[in-house]
Length: 126
Image (cartoon, rainbow, N blue to C red; front, side):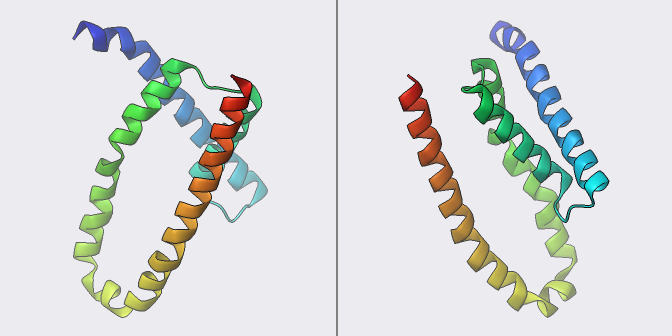
């Protein structure tokens, strides 16, 4: 319990930073009328800031790792929505399947390329 309490300020600060960038992304996409979800734009802003400043602080990395560990909780509402929207899913199964089959490999490839580039950058700065 004592360890958790020591890490609590960093966790709160990290969540505040993530929420702030999400809010900034929403403001930017609405102001510029961009066809991009605001939270995605906010993560892009955060990514650019982290690239510009170098390595994020350890407390921020650790807190974000905890949030990523809880990410599966955010998919529960989507799974329940599919359960209750069976008719719509049945009518649109082909576009959904194609989107999954095309988007998943592209996402994995982009993530791998970004991680490789970031690892090279971190290794060269050390």
